Amino acid sequence: MRVRLNVYFPPALAKQIDELAIRRRISRSAIVEAAVTSYLSPDGADRMEAAFARRLDRLSRQIQRLERNTGLSTEALALFVRFWLSVTPPLPDEDQAAAQVKGRKRYEGFVETLGRRYASGKSLLDEMPEDVWPKSATDSE
Image (cartoon, rainbow, N blue to C red; front, side, top):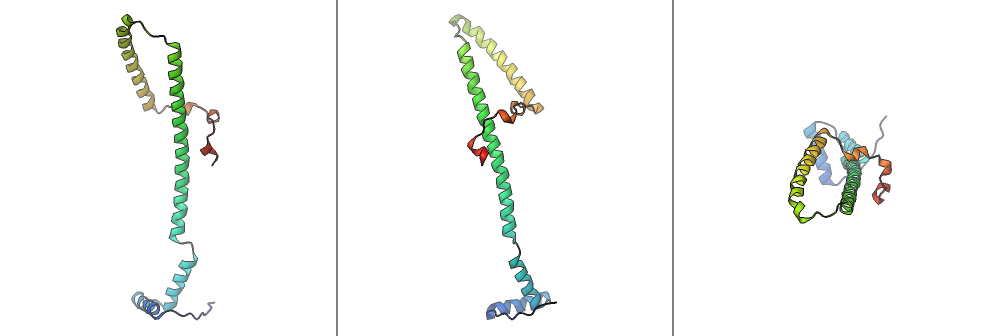
């Protein structure tokens, strides 16, 4: 059963409804019904806003992981440098040239190993359990 409503439109809007009804070969009631239904239902902007909110949430979680990983990497590097500087005595001048040659060879080996490990997909971050990472302010949001 349908309910009859009497509504009033400005003449210009009524003319647009009439023209659309003629072009589409549908009744004016069908046009007004579709317009009211569209107005009352969640529109594309609401759906788009929800999609953006989901994407922003995902990006926020990715940024939090990046911050945590960068912080961990920085701390690991700083800890290594501090330890290395603490335990490595300076070399006498006469041993410097031989140490530089040996250092270059060791560095090349390090780079090769790093390349193989990176290519295999292995990561130090994957080996670290998340429960040992300190919680940051962004983790609680």
